[in-house]
Length: 129
Image (cartoon, rainbow, N blue to C red):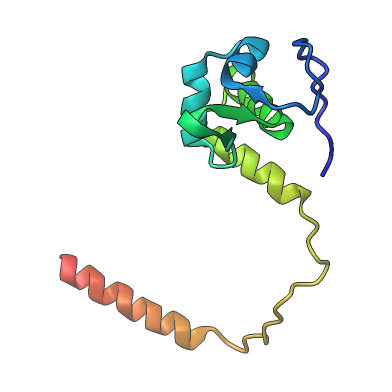
C-alpha cells in the first residue's frame, strides 16, 4: 500500500501516527460532527475505535477525509456524487484483464427473445388499459 503524505498536518506527530477525531478536525478545518456523519455516509471511512468509542484515524483515513472534503466542499459534489466518484476512482485503479474472464457464445439470432419480450409488453399494456 502506498504511504500517505501527511506533511501538511503540523501537529508534531509522525506522518504515520494515529490521530484522534479532534486532531484531524483541527488540522483539516472540519468539525467533528461532520467527520462522524461522513463515517456513516462513506463505508470506506472506518477509523479504529477503542474503549468508550474513541476514534483513531490512520493516515489512509485522513487521506480519504481530505479527498471527501475536496469533492464536497471545493468541487461541489453531493454526498451521492462523491460516493460515486470515490467508487469510480477505486474501479479505475484496479487492473482489469485484457480479455473478459467469461466467454459467451455468439447469439445467432435474438428474434425469439424479442418476440417473447414483445408479448410480455403487449400483455402488460392490455392489463393496464
